[in-house]
Length: 457
Image 1 (tube, rainbow, N blue to C red):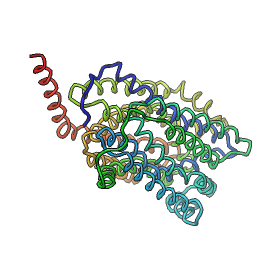
Image 2: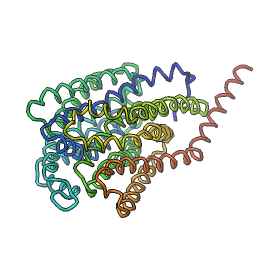
Image 3: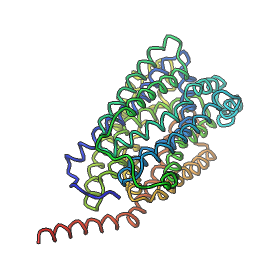
Protein backbone atom coordinates (compact mmCIF):
# COMPACT_ATOMS: atom_id res chain seq x y z
CA UNK A 1 0.00 0.00 0.00
CA UNK A 2 1.39 3.39 -0.94
CA UNK A 3 1.95 6.01 1.74
CA UNK A 4 -0.02 9.23 1.26
CA UNK A 5 2.94 11.60 1.13
CA UNK A 6 0.82 14.30 -0.50
CA UNK A 7 -2.93 15.09 -0.47
CA UNK A 8 -4.88 13.62 -3.38
CA UNK A 9 -6.43 16.79 -4.75
CA UNK A 10 -8.55 17.04 -7.86
CA UNK A 11 -5.67 18.73 -9.66
CA UNK A 12 -3.20 16.02 -8.70
CA UNK A 13 -5.63 13.31 -9.77
CA UNK A 14 -6.24 15.02 -13.12
CA UNK A 15 -2.54 15.55 -13.85
CA UNK A 16 -1.77 11.92 -13.04
CA UNK A 17 -4.81 10.43 -14.75
CA UNK A 18 -5.22 12.49 -17.93
CA UNK A 19 -2.15 11.10 -19.77
CA UNK A 20 -3.12 7.56 -18.78
CA UNK A 21 -6.70 8.05 -19.98
CA UNK A 22 -5.41 9.48 -23.24
CA UNK A 23 -3.15 6.46 -23.55
CA UNK A 24 -6.09 4.11 -23.14
CA UNK A 25 -8.14 5.96 -25.74
CA UNK A 26 -5.24 5.87 -28.19
CA UNK A 27 -4.58 2.23 -27.39
CA UNK A 28 -8.14 1.04 -27.89
CA UNK A 29 -8.63 3.25 -30.93
CA UNK A 30 -6.66 0.56 -32.74
CA UNK A 31 -9.74 -1.66 -32.57
CA UNK A 32 -12.16 0.63 -34.45
CA UNK A 33 -9.36 1.64 -36.83
CA UNK A 34 -8.67 -1.98 -37.71
CA UNK A 35 -12.39 -2.74 -37.90
CA UNK A 36 -12.78 0.14 -40.34
CA UNK A 37 -9.92 -1.18 -42.48
CA UNK A 38 -11.06 -4.82 -42.38
CA UNK A 39 -14.62 -3.75 -43.20
CA UNK A 40 -13.26 -2.53 -46.52
CA UNK A 41 -11.67 -5.88 -47.39
CA UNK A 42 -12.76 -7.95 -50.35
CA UNK A 43 -14.61 -10.31 -47.96
CA UNK A 44 -15.39 -8.15 -44.90
CA UNK A 45 -17.29 -10.78 -42.89
CA UNK A 46 -14.51 -13.36 -43.19
CA UNK A 47 -11.82 -10.74 -42.53
CA UNK A 48 -13.54 -9.32 -39.43
CA UNK A 49 -14.44 -12.74 -38.01
CA UNK A 50 -11.05 -14.28 -38.81
CA UNK A 51 -9.08 -11.43 -37.30
CA UNK A 52 -11.38 -11.25 -34.29
CA UNK A 53 -10.85 -14.89 -33.48
CA UNK A 54 -7.10 -14.91 -34.17
CA UNK A 55 -6.69 -11.85 -31.98
CA UNK A 56 -8.66 -13.49 -29.15
CA UNK A 57 -6.32 -16.50 -29.32
CA UNK A 58 -3.29 -14.22 -29.39
CA UNK A 59 -4.83 -12.29 -26.50
CA UNK A 60 -4.72 -15.37 -24.33
CA UNK A 61 -0.99 -15.66 -25.10
CA UNK A 62 0.02 -12.07 -24.49
CA UNK A 63 -2.54 -11.15 -21.81
CA UNK A 64 -0.42 -12.42 -18.87
CA UNK A 65 2.25 -9.90 -19.85
CA UNK A 66 -0.04 -6.92 -19.20
CA UNK A 67 0.42 -7.40 -15.45
CA UNK A 68 4.11 -6.62 -15.79
CA UNK A 69 3.21 -2.93 -15.84
CA UNK A 70 1.47 -3.22 -12.47
CA UNK A 71 4.19 -5.44 -11.05
CA UNK A 72 7.00 -3.11 -12.15
CA UNK A 73 5.22 -0.05 -10.75
CA UNK A 74 4.31 -1.74 -7.46
CA UNK A 75 7.81 -3.21 -6.93
CA UNK A 76 9.59 0.05 -7.71
CA UNK A 77 7.28 2.03 -5.43
CA UNK A 78 8.10 -0.52 -2.71
CA UNK A 79 11.85 0.02 -3.35
CA UNK A 80 12.21 -3.36 -5.06
CA UNK A 81 14.53 -4.30 -7.92
CA UNK A 82 13.58 -3.45 -11.51
CA UNK A 83 16.12 -5.94 -12.87
CA UNK A 84 14.17 -8.87 -11.41
CA UNK A 85 10.92 -7.67 -13.00
CA UNK A 86 12.65 -7.08 -16.34
CA UNK A 87 14.21 -10.56 -16.37
CA UNK A 88 10.90 -12.21 -15.50
CA UNK A 89 9.02 -10.22 -18.17
CA UNK A 90 11.43 -10.89 -21.01
CA UNK A 91 11.64 -14.65 -20.39
CA UNK A 92 7.89 -15.05 -20.01
CA UNK A 93 7.22 -12.99 -23.13
CA UNK A 94 9.65 -15.07 -25.17
CA UNK A 95 7.94 -18.27 -24.02
CA UNK A 96 4.47 -17.13 -25.06
CA UNK A 97 5.73 -15.81 -28.40
CA UNK A 98 7.20 -19.25 -29.05
CA UNK A 99 3.77 -20.77 -28.45
CA UNK A 100 2.31 -18.24 -30.88
CA UNK A 101 4.88 -19.17 -33.51
CA UNK A 102 3.97 -22.84 -33.13
CA UNK A 103 0.32 -22.01 -33.74
CA UNK A 104 1.21 -19.80 -36.70
CA UNK A 105 3.67 -22.00 -38.57
CA UNK A 106 2.87 -25.61 -37.69
CA UNK A 107 -0.21 -27.81 -38.19
CA UNK A 108 -1.11 -26.97 -34.59
CA UNK A 109 -2.68 -23.73 -35.82
CA UNK A 110 -5.30 -25.31 -38.04
CA UNK A 111 -6.01 -27.89 -35.33
CA UNK A 112 -6.47 -25.25 -32.60
CA UNK A 113 -8.74 -23.05 -34.68
CA UNK A 114 -10.69 -25.98 -36.07
CA UNK A 115 -11.22 -27.45 -32.60
CA UNK A 116 -12.43 -24.18 -31.08
CA UNK A 117 -14.52 -22.95 -33.99
CA UNK A 118 -15.70 -26.24 -35.43
CA UNK A 119 -14.87 -25.10 -38.94
CA UNK A 120 -16.67 -26.92 -41.70
CA UNK A 121 -18.93 -28.85 -39.33
CA UNK A 122 -22.55 -28.21 -38.48
CA UNK A 123 -22.78 -25.15 -36.28
CA UNK A 124 -19.20 -24.10 -37.03
CA UNK A 125 -17.70 -21.21 -38.92
CA UNK A 126 -16.86 -21.30 -42.61
CA UNK A 127 -13.54 -22.47 -43.99
CA UNK A 128 -12.91 -18.92 -45.20
CA UNK A 129 -12.95 -17.63 -41.60
CA UNK A 130 -10.62 -20.43 -40.47
CA UNK A 131 -8.14 -19.62 -43.24
CA UNK A 132 -8.20 -15.92 -42.36
CA UNK A 133 -7.55 -16.70 -38.69
CA UNK A 134 -4.52 -18.87 -39.45
CA UNK A 135 -3.10 -16.21 -41.79
CA UNK A 136 -3.48 -13.55 -39.10
CA UNK A 137 -1.54 -15.59 -36.55
CA UNK A 138 1.43 -15.53 -38.92
CA UNK A 139 1.80 -11.83 -38.07
CA UNK A 140 0.61 -11.83 -34.45
CA UNK A 141 3.06 -14.30 -32.91
CA UNK A 142 5.69 -11.64 -31.87
CA UNK A 143 3.05 -9.72 -29.88
CA UNK A 144 3.60 -11.47 -26.50
CA UNK A 145 7.31 -10.62 -26.34
CA UNK A 146 6.75 -7.04 -27.49
CA UNK A 147 4.00 -6.68 -24.88
CA UNK A 148 6.34 -7.92 -22.14
CA UNK A 149 9.01 -5.39 -23.03
CA UNK A 150 6.53 -2.54 -23.39
CA UNK A 151 4.69 -3.30 -20.15
CA UNK A 152 7.91 -3.58 -18.18
CA UNK A 153 9.05 -0.10 -19.15
CA UNK A 154 5.55 1.38 -18.88
CA UNK A 155 5.53 0.25 -15.25
CA UNK A 156 8.87 1.97 -14.74
CA UNK A 157 7.41 5.20 -16.13
CA UNK A 158 4.27 4.94 -13.97
CA UNK A 159 6.39 4.46 -10.84
CA UNK A 160 8.38 7.55 -11.81
CA UNK A 161 5.11 9.47 -12.40
CA UNK A 162 6.19 10.06 -16.02
CA UNK A 163 2.94 9.12 -17.73
CA UNK A 164 3.43 11.59 -20.60
CA UNK A 165 5.88 9.39 -22.56
CA UNK A 166 3.39 6.51 -22.31
CA UNK A 167 0.72 8.58 -24.07
CA UNK A 168 3.23 9.78 -26.68
CA UNK A 169 4.34 6.21 -27.42
CA UNK A 170 0.76 5.02 -27.82
CA UNK A 171 -0.06 7.90 -30.16
CA UNK A 172 2.87 6.84 -32.34
CA UNK A 173 1.62 3.28 -32.33
CA UNK A 174 -1.88 4.34 -33.37
CA UNK A 175 -0.60 6.53 -36.20
CA UNK A 176 1.68 3.81 -37.59
CA UNK A 177 -1.07 1.20 -37.31
CA UNK A 178 -3.54 3.36 -39.23
CA UNK A 179 -1.02 4.09 -41.98
CA UNK A 180 -0.17 0.41 -42.42
CA UNK A 181 -3.80 -0.78 -42.27
CA UNK A 182 -5.21 1.68 -44.81
CA UNK A 183 -2.07 1.98 -46.88
CA UNK A 184 -2.17 -1.71 -47.81
CA UNK A 185 -5.90 -2.03 -48.56
CA UNK A 186 -5.05 -2.13 -52.26
CA UNK A 187 -3.92 -5.72 -51.69
CA UNK A 188 -7.55 -6.70 -51.06
CA UNK A 189 -7.20 -6.67 -47.30
CA UNK A 190 -8.01 -9.57 -45.02
CA UNK A 191 -7.34 -10.61 -41.44
CA UNK A 192 -3.59 -10.74 -42.08
CA UNK A 193 -3.58 -7.00 -42.81
CA UNK A 194 -5.08 -6.18 -39.41
CA UNK A 195 -2.55 -8.45 -37.71
CA UNK A 196 0.42 -6.93 -39.54
CA UNK A 197 -0.69 -3.38 -38.75
CA UNK A 198 -1.20 -4.24 -35.08
CA UNK A 199 2.25 -5.82 -34.71
CA UNK A 200 4.12 -3.01 -36.48
CA UNK A 201 2.34 -0.39 -34.38
CA UNK A 202 3.15 -2.27 -31.17
CA UNK A 203 6.82 -2.47 -32.17
CA UNK A 204 6.97 1.33 -32.54
CA UNK A 205 5.28 1.88 -29.17
CA UNK A 206 7.64 -0.55 -27.46
CA UNK A 207 10.76 1.18 -28.77
CA UNK A 208 9.56 4.59 -27.58
CA UNK A 209 8.84 3.51 -23.98
CA UNK A 210 12.13 1.61 -23.77
CA UNK A 211 14.03 4.75 -24.77
CA UNK A 212 12.14 6.98 -22.29
CA UNK A 213 14.14 7.68 -19.12
CA UNK A 214 13.19 7.99 -15.44
CA UNK A 215 16.14 9.93 -13.99
CA UNK A 216 14.64 10.42 -10.50
CA UNK A 217 13.77 6.75 -9.93
CA UNK A 218 16.12 4.24 -8.28
CA UNK A 219 15.92 1.04 -10.34
CA UNK A 220 17.88 -1.22 -8.01
CA UNK A 221 16.29 -2.27 -4.72
CA UNK A 222 17.46 -4.35 -1.80
CA UNK A 223 15.73 -7.66 -2.63
CA UNK A 224 18.94 -9.57 -3.29
CA UNK A 225 18.75 -13.07 -4.71
CA UNK A 226 15.12 -13.49 -3.65
CA UNK A 227 13.96 -10.85 -6.14
CA UNK A 228 12.98 -13.27 -8.90
CA UNK A 229 10.95 -15.44 -6.50
CA UNK A 230 9.17 -12.42 -5.07
CA UNK A 231 8.26 -11.15 -8.52
CA UNK A 232 6.96 -14.58 -9.58
CA UNK A 233 4.84 -15.00 -6.44
CA UNK A 234 3.45 -11.50 -6.74
CA UNK A 235 2.77 -11.82 -10.47
CA UNK A 236 1.15 -15.26 -10.66
CA UNK A 237 -2.35 -14.30 -9.42
CA UNK A 238 -2.30 -11.15 -11.53
CA UNK A 239 -1.30 -13.13 -14.61
CA UNK A 240 -4.18 -15.50 -13.93
CA UNK A 241 -6.48 -12.50 -13.67
CA UNK A 242 -5.46 -11.00 -17.01
CA UNK A 243 -5.39 -14.42 -18.66
CA UNK A 244 -9.00 -14.89 -17.58
CA UNK A 245 -9.82 -11.42 -18.89
CA UNK A 246 -8.45 -12.13 -22.33
CA UNK A 247 -9.87 -15.62 -22.35
CA UNK A 248 -13.32 -14.03 -22.17
CA UNK A 249 -13.60 -12.99 -25.86
CA UNK A 250 -12.15 -16.35 -26.87
CA UNK A 251 -14.75 -18.20 -24.80
CA UNK A 252 -17.53 -15.99 -26.13
CA UNK A 253 -16.39 -16.51 -29.73
CA UNK A 254 -16.40 -20.25 -29.15
CA UNK A 255 -19.98 -19.92 -27.90
CA UNK A 256 -20.99 -17.77 -30.88
CA UNK A 257 -19.52 -20.37 -33.23
CA UNK A 258 -22.35 -22.64 -32.05
CA UNK A 259 -25.14 -20.17 -32.92
CA UNK A 260 -27.32 -20.04 -36.02
CA UNK A 261 -25.12 -17.68 -38.07
CA UNK A 262 -21.64 -17.93 -36.53
CA UNK A 263 -19.68 -15.92 -39.11
CA UNK A 264 -21.85 -12.83 -38.74
CA UNK A 265 -22.30 -13.29 -35.01
CA UNK A 266 -18.52 -13.29 -34.41
CA UNK A 267 -17.96 -10.41 -36.84
CA UNK A 268 -20.74 -8.31 -35.25
CA UNK A 269 -19.50 -9.07 -31.73
CA UNK A 270 -16.05 -7.89 -32.77
CA UNK A 271 -17.51 -4.62 -34.09
CA UNK A 272 -19.39 -3.93 -30.84
CA UNK A 273 -16.35 -4.81 -28.75
CA UNK A 274 -14.23 -2.39 -30.77
CA UNK A 275 -16.65 0.51 -30.24
CA UNK A 276 -17.65 -0.38 -26.68
CA UNK A 277 -14.13 -0.81 -25.30
CA UNK A 278 -12.88 2.26 -27.12
CA UNK A 279 -15.41 4.38 -25.24
CA UNK A 280 -14.77 2.50 -21.98
CA UNK A 281 -10.99 2.83 -22.32
CA UNK A 282 -10.43 5.87 -20.04
CA UNK A 283 -11.76 4.07 -16.96
CA UNK A 284 -9.25 1.24 -17.39
CA UNK A 285 -6.51 3.35 -15.84
CA UNK A 286 -8.38 3.54 -12.53
CA UNK A 287 -6.31 0.54 -11.51
CA UNK A 288 -3.11 2.57 -11.72
CA UNK A 289 -4.76 5.49 -9.95
CA UNK A 290 -5.73 3.34 -6.97
CA UNK A 291 -2.27 1.74 -6.87
CA UNK A 292 -0.36 5.03 -6.99
CA UNK A 293 -2.72 7.47 -5.25
CA UNK A 294 -4.76 5.60 -2.62
CA UNK A 295 -2.92 5.36 0.67
CA UNK A 296 -5.71 6.00 3.20
CA UNK A 297 -9.51 6.01 3.46
CA UNK A 298 -9.77 9.71 2.55
CA UNK A 299 -7.84 9.17 -0.68
CA UNK A 300 -9.95 6.03 -1.28
CA UNK A 301 -13.13 8.12 -1.24
CA UNK A 302 -11.74 10.93 -3.36
CA UNK A 303 -10.23 8.76 -6.09
CA UNK A 304 -13.35 6.58 -6.15
CA UNK A 305 -15.54 9.68 -6.59
CA UNK A 306 -13.44 11.14 -9.40
CA UNK A 307 -13.13 7.74 -11.02
CA UNK A 308 -16.90 7.39 -10.81
CA UNK A 309 -17.30 10.64 -12.73
CA UNK A 310 -15.05 9.31 -15.48
CA UNK A 311 -16.91 5.97 -15.64
CA UNK A 312 -20.40 7.51 -15.69
CA UNK A 313 -19.36 10.04 -18.33
CA UNK A 314 -18.15 7.26 -20.62
CA UNK A 315 -21.34 5.30 -19.94
CA UNK A 316 -23.37 8.33 -21.03
CA UNK A 317 -21.30 8.69 -24.21
CA UNK A 318 -21.87 5.03 -25.12
CA UNK A 319 -25.59 5.30 -24.41
CA UNK A 320 -25.73 8.27 -26.78
CA UNK A 321 -23.88 6.36 -29.49
CA UNK A 322 -26.24 3.41 -29.01
CA UNK A 323 -29.36 5.42 -29.84
CA UNK A 324 -31.08 4.03 -32.98
CA UNK A 325 -30.66 7.29 -34.87
CA UNK A 326 -26.95 7.46 -34.07
CA UNK A 327 -25.65 3.90 -34.15
CA UNK A 328 -26.77 3.23 -37.73
CA UNK A 329 -24.82 6.10 -39.32
CA UNK A 330 -21.94 5.52 -36.87
CA UNK A 331 -21.40 1.87 -37.73
CA UNK A 332 -22.20 2.36 -41.39
CA UNK A 333 -19.76 5.25 -41.75
CA UNK A 334 -17.04 3.52 -39.74
CA UNK A 335 -17.11 0.22 -41.56
CA UNK A 336 -18.48 1.09 -45.03
CA UNK A 337 -20.59 -2.08 -44.96
CA UNK A 338 -23.47 -0.98 -47.16
CA UNK A 339 -23.38 -4.42 -48.78
CA UNK A 340 -23.80 -6.13 -45.37
CA UNK A 341 -26.97 -4.63 -43.82
CA UNK A 342 -27.59 -7.76 -41.74
CA UNK A 343 -24.15 -7.48 -40.13
CA UNK A 344 -24.77 -3.83 -39.26
CA UNK A 345 -28.21 -4.66 -37.84
CA UNK A 346 -26.76 -7.42 -35.68
CA UNK A 347 -24.07 -5.15 -34.26
CA UNK A 348 -26.58 -2.34 -33.73
CA UNK A 349 -28.84 -4.53 -31.62
CA UNK A 350 -25.98 -5.41 -29.26
CA UNK A 351 -24.49 -1.92 -28.87
CA UNK A 352 -27.04 -0.62 -26.27
CA UNK A 353 -26.20 -3.53 -23.97
CA UNK A 354 -22.50 -2.69 -24.24
CA UNK A 355 -23.26 0.70 -22.64
CA UNK A 356 -22.83 -1.08 -19.29
CA UNK A 357 -19.14 -1.70 -20.04
CA UNK A 358 -17.65 1.61 -18.79
CA UNK A 359 -19.27 1.56 -15.34
CA UNK A 360 -18.70 -2.14 -14.68
CA UNK A 361 -15.15 -1.95 -16.00
CA UNK A 362 -14.45 1.06 -13.80
CA UNK A 363 -15.58 -0.79 -10.68
CA UNK A 364 -13.40 -3.75 -11.60
CA UNK A 365 -10.29 -1.71 -12.29
CA UNK A 366 -10.51 0.55 -9.24
CA UNK A 367 -10.98 -2.27 -6.74
CA UNK A 368 -8.40 -4.51 -8.39
CA UNK A 369 -5.89 -1.69 -7.99
CA UNK A 370 -6.63 -1.53 -4.26
CA UNK A 371 -5.87 -5.23 -3.84
CA UNK A 372 -2.69 -4.95 -5.92
CA UNK A 373 -1.52 -1.99 -3.86
CA UNK A 374 -2.24 -3.93 -0.67
CA UNK A 375 -0.25 -6.93 -1.93
CA UNK A 376 -3.36 -9.19 -1.93
CA UNK A 377 -3.17 -10.27 -5.54
CA UNK A 378 -4.77 -13.64 -4.79
CA UNK A 379 -8.17 -11.94 -4.42
CA UNK A 380 -7.78 -10.49 -7.92
CA UNK A 381 -7.14 -13.96 -9.33
CA UNK A 382 -10.18 -15.43 -7.57
CA UNK A 383 -12.40 -12.64 -8.93
CA UNK A 384 -11.23 -13.38 -12.46
CA UNK A 385 -11.98 -17.09 -12.11
CA UNK A 386 -15.46 -16.29 -10.80
CA UNK A 387 -16.12 -14.02 -13.78
CA UNK A 388 -15.15 -16.66 -16.33
CA UNK A 389 -17.04 -19.39 -14.47
CA UNK A 390 -20.18 -17.26 -14.48
CA UNK A 391 -19.82 -16.62 -18.23
CA UNK A 392 -19.44 -20.32 -18.98
CA UNK A 393 -22.41 -21.20 -16.77
CA UNK A 394 -24.63 -18.51 -18.29
CA UNK A 395 -23.60 -19.49 -21.83
CA UNK A 396 -24.44 -23.13 -21.19
CA UNK A 397 -27.88 -22.28 -19.85
CA UNK A 398 -28.68 -19.79 -22.62
CA UNK A 399 -27.54 -22.07 -25.44
CA UNK A 400 -29.57 -24.92 -24.05
CA UNK A 401 -32.54 -22.55 -23.92
CA UNK A 402 -32.02 -21.66 -27.60
CA UNK A 403 -30.79 -18.08 -27.09
CA UNK A 404 -28.61 -18.30 -30.21
CA UNK A 405 -31.35 -19.72 -32.37
CA UNK A 406 -31.82 -16.55 -34.40
CA UNK A 407 -28.91 -15.07 -36.31
CA UNK A 408 -29.60 -11.50 -35.16
CA UNK A 409 -29.26 -12.54 -31.50
CA UNK A 410 -25.68 -13.79 -31.75
CA UNK A 411 -23.87 -10.56 -30.89
CA UNK A 412 -26.46 -9.72 -28.21
CA UNK A 413 -25.69 -13.05 -26.60
CA UNK A 414 -21.96 -12.33 -26.66
CA UNK A 415 -22.23 -8.85 -25.10
CA UNK A 416 -24.72 -10.10 -22.54
CA UNK A 417 -22.32 -12.80 -21.39
CA UNK A 418 -19.53 -10.22 -20.99
CA UNK A 419 -21.83 -8.03 -18.86
CA UNK A 420 -22.83 -10.95 -16.64
CA UNK A 421 -19.18 -11.75 -15.94
CA UNK A 422 -18.32 -8.14 -15.07
CA UNK A 423 -21.25 -7.90 -12.66
CA UNK A 424 -20.21 -11.05 -10.79
CA UNK A 425 -16.54 -10.05 -10.59
CA UNK A 426 -17.29 -6.47 -9.51
CA UNK A 427 -19.65 -7.55 -6.75
CA UNK A 428 -17.04 -9.97 -5.39
CA UNK A 429 -14.25 -7.36 -5.37
CA UNK A 430 -16.38 -4.70 -3.66
CA UNK A 431 -17.45 -7.14 -0.96
CA UNK A 432 -13.92 -8.33 -0.27
CA UNK A 433 -12.55 -4.78 -0.26
CA UNK A 434 -14.93 -3.75 2.51
CA UNK A 435 -13.68 -6.55 4.74
CA UNK A 436 -10.02 -6.86 3.71
CA UNK A 437 -8.67 -3.51 2.49
CA UNK A 438 -10.90 -0.73 3.78
CA UNK A 439 -10.10 -1.35 7.48
CA UNK A 440 -6.40 -0.95 6.73
CA UNK A 441 -7.06 2.26 4.78
CA UNK A 442 -9.06 3.64 7.70
CA UNK A 443 -6.22 2.78 10.08
CA UNK A 444 -3.74 4.62 7.87
CA UNK A 445 -6.05 7.62 7.78
CA UNK A 446 -6.21 7.61 11.57
CA UNK A 447 -2.41 7.45 11.78
CA UNK A 448 -2.07 10.41 9.41
CA UNK A 449 -4.58 12.52 11.33
CA UNK A 450 -2.92 11.58 14.62
CA UNK A 451 0.50 12.60 13.35
CA UNK A 452 -0.91 15.95 12.25
CA UNK A 453 -2.44 16.57 15.67
CA UNK A 454 0.85 15.78 17.41
CA UNK A 455 2.79 18.07 15.11
CA UNK A 456 0.34 20.88 15.79
CA UNK A 457 0.69 20.44 19.54
